[in-house]
Length: 283
View: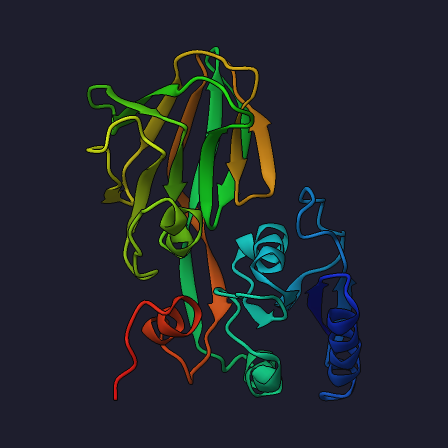
């Protein structure tokens, strides 16, 4: 018997679909799958994975926050994730509720097309020691948590000379996360198949300060020049760590990938049009 983990938001609509999913798994075929319900908060910290659960598939019922939680909690080992959009935007969740069963059946049979998404390993180095580590599917954001003077950040790429940023913060985004905070801050949309990531300043001091698209094989280090009352590193909007003067934030390509079940009826550019309206419809 194989485990199927159902990560769901604690809303009536999601819980009803989770209940339907449990009954579907128990009957398809009999005794082939064991449903495991995970109602951990998508905005809370990532808790430990229960012992003895080795999922063949993870199902995310909610919005992008729920899918990020599912990926961080269950998907770093490469287990396929089927995202069902029960939220408002649901950019990463490939299945609308009416298409859910059509994608669920091939996913259970191991016949679904999968989309591999790159990840960033993000660490904080303080006094020569690593004091924080996390993995980002979307982004890692250095930001001041309250109104304060502008941040002075120092950037190094692959050990090169130091470059300065003066801004309210800095976004280190994967291609997957390029349509999230990065896009809102004026950064470019990057196709998820590209081996790249994006550095985008938040409200930069100079108008000439723009996003950088860098090789995913680069090693990025951002140094904190001084400590404000609250400067935080936030990963995927879900894991936060308070930074201090002299800290170095290092980001490199992760050895892990997240595998998302693809919707065969929709391409990535279709999603851009449907969710963000970036293109005019062909007449």
